Length: 444
Ligand code: GDP
Image 1 (cartoon, rainbow, N blue to C red):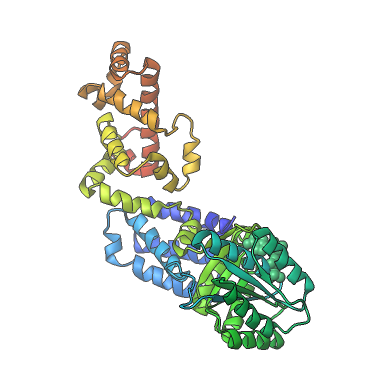
Image 2 (tube, protein in one colour; image 1 turned 30 degrees about the vertical axis):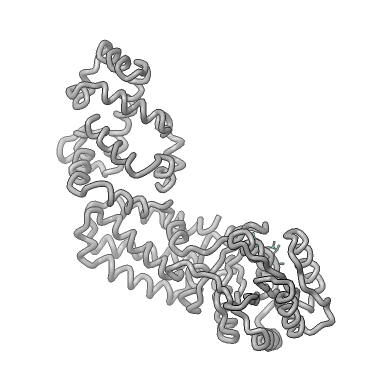
């Protein structure tokens, strides 16, 4: 899986700081040290790491961050924003020529995945943008490359312009565009030759094709698994050809993420697509913010925080946090929390945005399904105020009354009581136990 190693490495660091109610300068320093090591281990360019850490420190130590409602989370937000910027910030778009066809030239070293990506890109353009591309076989040195593209064309039911291995690649490209105009094809994707290493002959040929067809995009295809080599290749190609973007292939197998994190910063050129597997539908638009979330193993926790911020008023949230800490959280509060969470949207969606959600979903007795939540709400509503504040007074006859009033069974009432106690324990753990102990709370 993409970024798995890096994400694993960062999990502990993230968890440590997210749980903090106060973040000191020392905390930030410790965190950035760990982030720095993790990124270097992930083969991110040294200078890129240095600049990034400097920016994170500057922002995270600023007072507006330290004074916030959730300082730990805000620090992580800074890290996430900086990682997003590092990868290009906004997702970049693909060019559309004023006058069709839009010409895309695919370049890259042999084995990077250029031919496969040519097919994937055509598929993507048709599927997601309703375009009708034509593929062009301009790698005349390897008959296998032409065959491969023709096979892809057949699979996609898309035309492949080819003149075999005897023609000149520049002529092929030129004629292909004429053909595309005649056939009303709106995109022409040219699969050019690759070599094992960057060499002058190859660059000259690519330059000639570029000068002749004046492409709207030059996409460099690089293999994510080659880490800093991919970054160096990107630098050479960009120096020679002034590429417009990068397609990072084999991200599915790249657990480290060094190339993904360095390319934009080193070359100034954005990663536009990521290859996530060998199949023709496994090409994804590259979203820097989603990638950053993935690296931090945060699910989409930031959109969750943002969502919560618009729903929950700060004073109440603080009160609630205090109640969770000192274990005075009651069924009354639970009911209120539930209605707030429900205002945020369907529970499944919310759960999916939470990091580690899969693990939580699997927790015994904690399954979240909307119907069950309806029952829970009904049970709590059938309790008296006293019972909500102090569930310990609940005896058999009270339970029976509540079950009847809520249209549930005594077993369901019992289950909820048990779950509520478990949840309180969990909350206490999540909020950090120390404070509670000092205050003489239950030592669970
Ligand atoms: P080219 O020499 O640059 O044209 O490379 P190919 O298109 O022939 O691809 C080389 C190998 O990489 C093939 O086995 C592809 O199936 C594989 N490949 C390409 N893109 C991806 C990707 O995103 N993920 C994975 N796992 N394999 C890929």
